[in-house]
Image 1 (tube, one colour):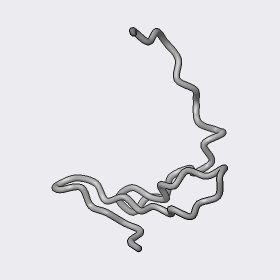
Image 2 (image 1 turned 90 degrees about the vertical axis):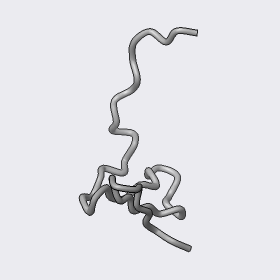
Image 3 (image 1 turned 120 degrees about the vertical axis):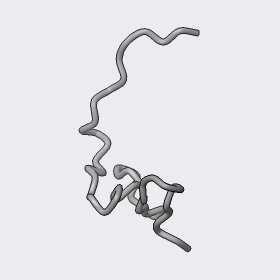
Image 4 (image 1 turned 90 degrees about the horizontal axis):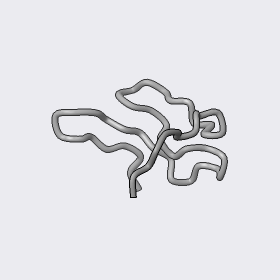
Length: 50
């Protein structure tokens, strides 16, 4: 099973499909680690048109 994919002429994304429930599966973008603790991420706000 792979752990990385490259978007054509764009980003490379590393991931962990076996990540614990409290962690985002994306580990790094272009080799730079990302904050995987999604509880710290801001919530979406604003008006959502239906």
